[in-house]
Image (cartoon, rainbow, N blue to C red; front, side, top):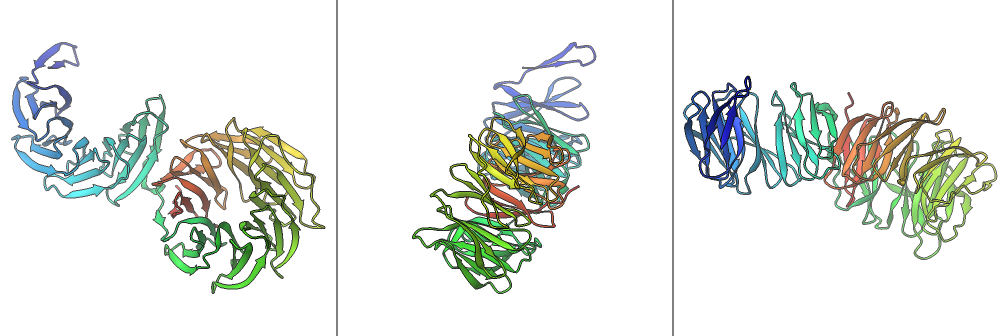
Length: 558
């Protein structure tokens, strides 16, 4: 039964019988001349909105109709359901003008473009489709997410949005045929969507009472490319000019990609490269590769020829697992799996500084930009700092009762920051080893830290998905931001410091404004990203996902 009331008086105007079967969906003509309803049963019923009598009974191929849509002009009506098809009728004659059959499930939702030129559907098997009306020409809108939900179409027809059962929102840009996946938050059910009248923003309302709003402009999308790699890539680092990146594959090879051409420049296949141990000269002339044999091989970038091999571990089974260079260009530092640290002079390739390990692995290694100190974080959460010049004197160990999980240093080498498992961030003076600042980022682990290239701010991320940023002039917090629905594993700053990128277990890379904490863009991946970085002097963002696949996004700010 359908009841109709007058909006002006509230008076009951009509009772319309839906016949056998339950009516669950109602749509009306834009000019108010007719009303259509459907649900369980094989018919869509249409009533005249003046005399309130049935004027058409349209037979569907579905046992249940799950979606109805009307052209904004009112000249056609579309229906779809479990019968795996979408039907379109002429609203003047109620004659079928289009039948679209699909081989996998029926649509959950239907939506029409403002012009009425095309009809979009979201399917039970996780795909969005759009067809021209009345020709039925198909545009497929791919998505890897199952159970697509309600559809919203931009007023000008430039994009389609769909909510999914896994709480994400997909935007498909019709003219350029590109998809942008937005995170709708950590909710229990798919969100409800609402578009701005001019289509400039899209809002999602979650069942936990939160509302999120995104800028729908296409400039927020990066030009995503997956760099071709037959083997999973674990280590990844950029050249100093940002024009190329180098990665160590899980198979023990080294590969260099041209970023602009998105293809491999050269391959070095020793089959013994250690996946996480890569470093690049500050002038880009050489690449350092740690090996599973306990050595470091220096490759000439121009020819990919091995020019020297440096040995730092002579014990069987010992690997070089971390490498880093000083910005000053004088030193290359490395750590092996037994905790031994070695610093080489890059002019002579002779070891200048060696510290034997004590059976503990090194999980993070930082050398100050001016090459005056070296810091290592061990697996037992001890943070140790050494003076590299003069005399390589060891400073007092810097440690806390709770474990250090992440470290980052000032560009001028004046301070070193460490985050711990209790959500605390501590800053030490590297000259004296004394504490200069201490603040709390909450109760979750500090997962990652990064510093602006000019040292003006320090950022930290947590296992709870939060981002904190402090002004290093007075160590006051600039903002606390949320947006990720998972652990934020990595952070990286743009060279100009205006924004930073985060990588989280919610399968996204997110770009933040470092002045306000506002989200500037979200880049969704099929699987979780493990790390991220920004290529030098550019707006190119790179990330490595689970399984080792590298991705590159060209971010176009504002």
